[in-house]
Image 1: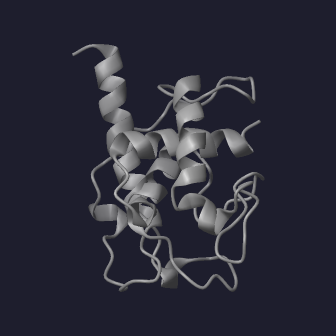
Image 2: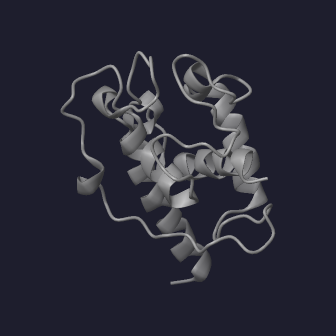
Length: 154
């Protein structure tokens, strides 16, 4: 299998896991736990440059993820500028409430969501639904995660 296809499959799997982790808010507490989601590959650490993208992430993915973020449900909770709202945390700083902010974790949390009872942001009225509460594809999740990663890894 080519490395490009292998990378896309790995990113898709990781994206699926992230979405499920983030999209459990507001509905029942019987959301799929992250442990039952498919195992996602771990991205290689960024290089010494703070602006380096994780392994397998491209500038095109980031650009597409930006577009999806601003047209999908992401911006409703995190704000059009991703600086956060009372419904969702700021994604532009180095503070992460649910994860440590690695690309694989971002994919995982977007894929599987976060049940309301697991949300660590004080006063948040909802959990995060898997796949952003929509039917985002694994590829779209990988693209959104790429964009979100760049917001706090400048």
